[in-house]
Amino acid sequence: MISNEKIEGFGFSDLRTEPLRQYSLTEFASDPLRFLCNLDLLHFNFVIFDDEIIRCRFQGESWKIFGDQGEDMFGIEEASGRVFFITRSLEGDTDLQICAETMDDFASLFNMFISYTFRFRASLKRPEDDQAEDARTYFLSYAGKYLNAETLATSYWATMCELVEHGELMLTNDFVQLFSTDRVLRGDDSWLEESTDNS
Image (cartoon, rainbow, N blue to C red; front, side, top):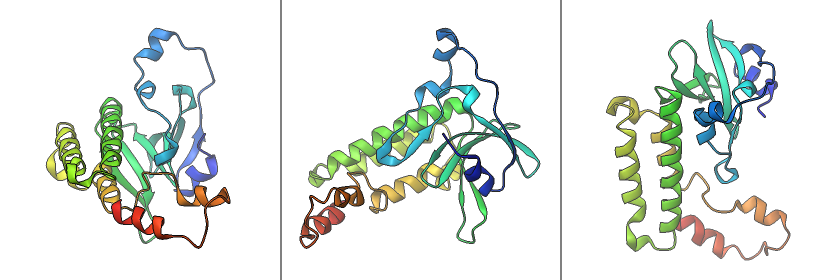
């Protein structure tokens, strides 16, 4: 669950949630939240039910916060229905990156992005297969059905692709997690350099 303190830290106010209720399977089946999934590998964390969404206000507009990724969040601008990634600029200001025009579009793009990251993972030990480039091209082509070229170029998805390809987004077991087990020799870091070179 996303903490109120985190949301308020981005400048959102008037936080509230709806009363918890029971859902019919028919109602839940059509909810785009059903098509999202929490994924520790990429630090995705989403609410499951609509009444867990946090309603709030930002710069005079109504918003719905439905998930986060690491230190940042995903939200819906209610007036437009558009989905944004809410992050910090280099200056520390709240920055909004477009993800999708609708929540249904976001669910589709999210799942295709997950597919892309796992195809990229498949290429880490077989770089000669060119799977990474093929996967990126296919994903961005798919995303182009939902966002025009200009919007896509500055979107959350374009940023994530860059992070993946430059090795800044960990797609394998986190090194910190591995070291925390005390089963990895600290003096032998050649495997770390090799993994970084291949990612």
